Amino acid sequence: MSHEWFLSALGGVAIGASAVLLMAALGRIAGISGIAGSLLSGAEKGDRGWRVAFLGGLVGAPLLAWLVRGESGLGPPQVSWPWMAVAGLLVGFGTRLGGGCTSGHGVCGIARLSPRSLLATVVFMAVGAGTVFVIRHVLGGTSS
Image 1 (tube, rainbow, N blue to C red):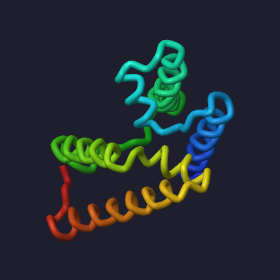
Image 2 (image 1 turned 60 degrees about the vertical axis):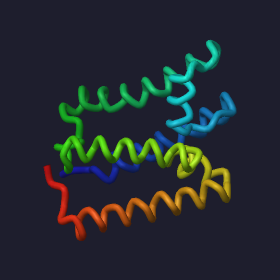
Image 3 (image 1 turned 90 degrees about the vertical axis):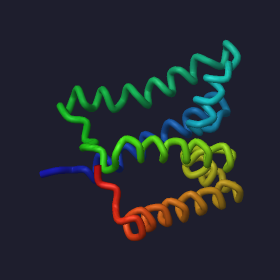
Image 4 (image 1 turned 120 degrees about the horizontal axis):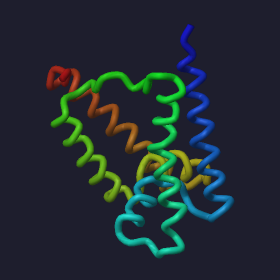
């Protein structure tokens, strides 16, 4: 019997806990685009360690789960590599335009009752739903 719902709930708890711990310990918001962007743009030396550790955990945790479970749980890509590249560029553009990413606005901002983050999250979700509709029903799907 599979317990994907449990693993998903556990992942949600881990994301929430990491956001709370980062805010409590360092007073920082767990927005991945801000963490990665500041690291890549030359964050101050004293500020680099926690950023590297946080991003390392994002990569290391799934690898550890794969080693423990013997599978990643991801499955094959649902779209072709060119579509993934286009999607990544659009997400990057949207992140800059929206002043943050889904983790910063959706997880941390809503938890802080930020009106800006609530609006940004509504826009993220609406654009995501619209994109899925257009790709699946107007363009005819994107199977690789």
